[in-house]
Image (cartoon, rainbow, N blue to C red):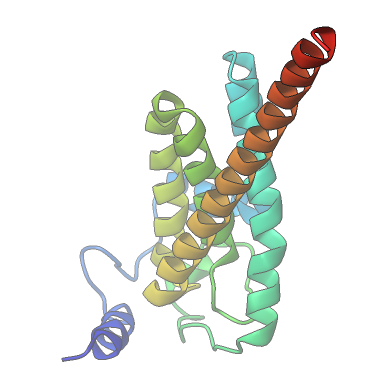
Length: 195
């Protein structure tokens, strides 16, 4: 069985009533995670808590990654037209006040959450211990409420992580260039003083 076949099977299995994805109404915490993460709103107070805990740089990097990832997710969603799981009549889906009809791929909730979480982990692994479980809860909430296929969420998580990794790489390059400029200025001043 190829990887694509396995992913299709994973998506198909998500339509069945199971222990991991039951049809019944989700726990209020799962509903709250899904609702508050809409539009990336959840990550604003999380960033605020990071800043209050003395982790301002981490908060800034995480919010920046999320702010870049969200429109990227919407752009991909605009290009890729995928129907959402046929679950409109299930209590799991009806638990949400929203009934999205946009393209299912990728999960924008997952894209934004993964960008925020990955940027946090890259900048501050200690803070990530508290942030990553929230990222996973948001991702699971999109499956549990049946608004996305598993591959939508997995693709969203991968996309968000890539955005944060690219941001970290760009940040390192910028810091390296700034350090090189400062070093060059010091060298010039030393040699110009001896000429």
